[in-house]
Amino acid sequence: MLTKALQNPFVSTLAVALIVVALPLVVGSNFHIRLATMVYIFSIVVLGLNLLMGYAGQVSLGHAGFFILGAYSVALGPSQLGLNPWLSMAGGVALTSALAFVIGRPLLRLSGYHLAMATLAFGAIVYVFITNEVDLTGGPDGMQVQRANLSVLGLSHLMSWYWLAGGFLVLSMLILSNLLSSPAGRALRALHDSEVAAGVLGIDVARAKLMAFVISAALAALAGANLALLDGHITPAAGGILRSVELLTMAVVGGLGSLVGSVAGAAFLVLLPQFLTEFHDYEHAILGFLLVVIMVMLPLGIVPSLNAVMRRWLP
Amino acid sequence: MLKVDQLASGYGRIKALHQVSLEVKRGEIVALVGANGAGKTTLLKAIAGVQPVAQGRIFLDAAPIEKLLPHQRVKLGLVLVPEGRQIFAPLTVEDNLRVGAWTRADDRSDGDLERVFSYFPVLKEFRARLAGSLSGGQQQMLAVGRALMSRPKMLLLDEPSMGLAPLVFKQIISVLESIRQSGVTIFVVEQNVNAVLKIVDRAYVLEMGKITLQGTGNELLADTRVQAAYLGV
Image 1: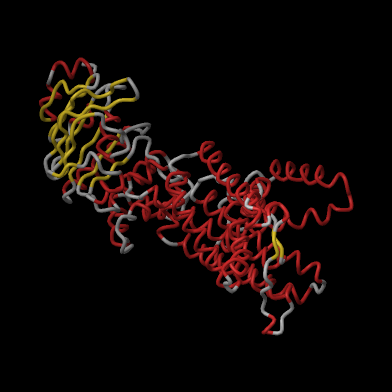
Image 2: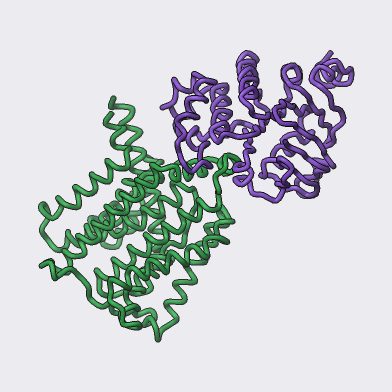
């Protein structure tokens, strides 16, 4: 009963919502609130990536590209077009989704390694473009982002973004939970298992993959916009190839095919380096070692592997 | 209902089917038999749309379908139960069946679910189990049931006996008979020639990518060439 409840996406959404609400009551320091906000922001991207990889079974090494497009949209909208930052965020998510729709059609005809290479190339193109368009984007130095927050509600800049990112995270989980419990979600899981079988049962395989791709790109752009508005400054490095690898690692470590796993993976890779800073030069070596240990001990990722253990021990 | 006209297909430079023509009429149950590698699965896949067609035409109710994508053929009522069953192992039995109802946007699939359960009561008993945990025979029942969920006009079955005990296969064959009586036309590919020829109206024999014989089930059972090649008489 308990294990079943834990696997229900709506139950995990509720649990995450409770954490978002309760955390500010427990931790007060700006540093910790900021870390939590970063976890929420990265969870949003990883949720989308998990929909694409864990449910639809399509790999992407280019999601940092969508992430950085979202981030630069809130930087460029106000500075170049005089738009308000909120409108820029909405516009950035919409434009990035449209871009994903256009490039997704040809890209998703590929699969496996070829798809990984093609998405990697997409991410590289976005990165190079942003780095080289110095007049527009400030190049490698990055650019300022016009301040936007909820100070009208009496919240500080940081707390504004804590609540906004937390709210977007819970909303994203709710939408994905709904999607996954619908026939479309079943179709996605079916197609992950066997594309041929899904096709001969009447599922438009290309369309289902494209849907997952566009949703994941939209979430990546949303998260990127959140990060840029939180930091007030953005550089191309926030969306380099290493970022794509990091996002993919979060999805895999947390657990493919588990929504709450995405949050766990994001939390793990955002928080752990903070605990490891006292090891100075060895920080990355220890982080790498821990990742290897986790993938050996919990091969399905943190959440699905723990679920499997609990199923064995609990009724 | 289904007409295949001068169909050719293959894998790269290797031709698996040479000018195959056959016809299945509404309400019939027709078999395609032949040895391993004769091209039976290639033909079914080409009809379902998951194998490219080099030449020739395929008609469903007189409309050409050879250019349509697999899911578009399903919408026209043509559903394949693929070789090796290809059930969705990580999904529950019920979810497998509901995926089968995907083409019907209404998602009011409860009635169809009950219909499938009436054919295969064991699926009702195991509806909450993961499909991967079922036995081979139960998985084959699930694959047939899943295909029925889209309310097909015509069912294509690829090697339903594969890996099954004779008794279990008999059970599935008797359900095929009831499915036909409910108005679904059936085209079945089989290597278990003896069992399948007994229940079909007509059958074709495919050898090296060509149709070499055709007739009613009983005619073929009595044919000395069939007996020598497939029945070990």
